[in-house]
Figure 1 (cartoon, rainbow, N blue to C red):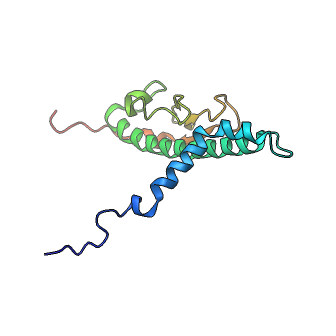
Figure 2 (figure 1 turned 135 degrees about the vertical axis):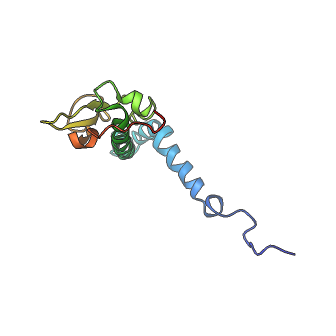
Figure 3 (figure 1 turned 60 degrees about the vertical axis):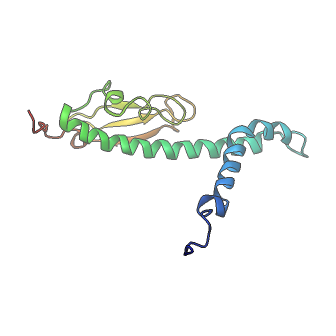
Length: 156
């Protein structure tokens, strides 16, 4: 008996070419940006900064989106972590979520400023320049986010 599957197992990413497009985007955004900057200097009126600058800006925007989403996941994890360990302090982030998760897309550790009963805290990535500035990515944390009633495991 024959199969009713007419695509022969070559569907999904490979059939639609999405994987190829993703590869091209990653290549142009990451590897080719310095070469494009160099090549654009030879274009009429090209100073090289426009093409490479735009690609770098797009790459930083993508990293910022990924970092913000990671920080939202960290916030949710801190809620669960605080139910077992109490409110976190500034040094608890790596222990709560792991070093890889506690790192932004530029490879720097995300900072935890713990909230108190009287003031809000935050998760903070220093953004593309690595310095406290307007491009930082900040996710607010309130006392209610991390001050959960401690749960005792049932076996204790």
